[in-house]
Amino acid sequence: MPCSLAAGFFITVIIRHAENRDYYASPPLRPRGQIITLDSYGTIKSFMALSDIIGQDRAVGILLRTLSRNRVPSAYLFAGEAGIGKRYTALNFAKALNCLNPVTHYALRVTSKSKIQDPELQTQNSEPQILNAELMDCCDECASCKKIDAMTHPDLVVVAPEKGEIRVGEIRAVEVALSFKPFEGKRKVVIIDEADAMNQAAANAFLKTLEEPPDESLLILITAHPDMLPETIRSRCCRLNFMPLASDACGKVIQKVLAQDKKRGETLDHALSAMVRLSMGRPGLAISSDLEKERERFIALLENMLHGDNETWADREEMEQWIDMAFIVLRDMLVWKIGEGRRGNWVFPHSVSGDVLLNPDMEDFISKMSKSSDIKDIIKAYATMLSLKRQMGFNLNKAITWNYTASVLKGVMGKG
Image (cartoon, rainbow, N blue to C red; front, side, top):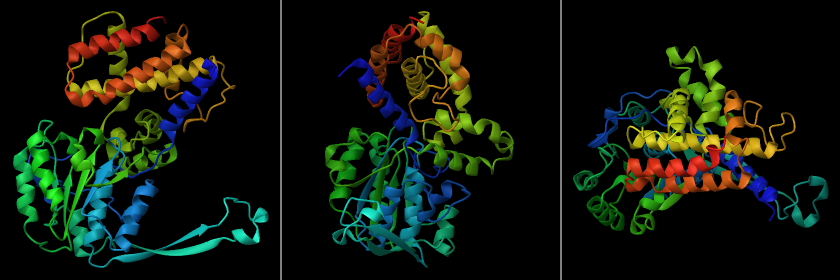
């Protein structure tokens, strides 16, 4: 395949990776390091029914149908990038499971025996069929729903890592909690957040619970790195994949959540476009951090790296954030190189701002970095950084990672 065709395909994949998305924001971060009941969260505003979650239509649809058919499995694995609504969906599913007055939604779905979608072209053997599906959801008004909204429901337990690790003691405490029948609800719901952080002893202890799940219980594992979980755990869970949001849906989530914050709401209109672009379909990330400041920090460290300075990242979290920002810059460099820097002649889908660059205000910087770069080298650097990100869960040495990343990016950016 010629390089131009390969690059065209690759950039289309990257653009769609950044734009084809949908969800509602994750709840605020909570205290870590112990079995966390819902009252430890504090009050979270704007909770709603499961069916009202913005985007994630496929995952939410599956959950609603299993609930309506009373075929909820004993364990779920919610997999997907951070900040796209896995925790929020899990909590709202817990509401739907334990709702005292569940409501019924009627969903109409039109299908046909033929794949032809034009009604004028359909034959007698491809007449459309209308299916009426009853989907059960929470009422969002009963005592159970209100308690989950207020984080005071006794039948929901959340476990989260302490200092990056979930230890066996926390899993033992979950086993004790599950040994009792539900106090008020229909099922006890246990949410293991960042389940890939379980150490070996914790994973082994949790495996026994998965093999012999208690009656009237539901286990939900949440992870952005499902491959880091033992195969024995993954194989015993019903996996649901969550995808990053589309630009429009991401903007709606950010706008709705930040509108409640008076300080950030005042500058929302000005910053919304940049937040949507830089979040790459992860509204939870945009809501919980200042992406523009992170970008400034990224540029400062990048310049140090390209000049051979030894300044490195402060911690693993900053390293991960920096690498995520590197993807955005490499993506823009590839777009710019393929478009040859000629405005008005782009052939790829436009982002929410009407510009294919995710960093339109950094046009001069992107142009300088990609001026002397080769398309093939940019693609190779992107793939290498993607491989590096997949290794982040293995406690990489910062200094070695810094030097390795510098060697990769100097080959493609150092030419500018």
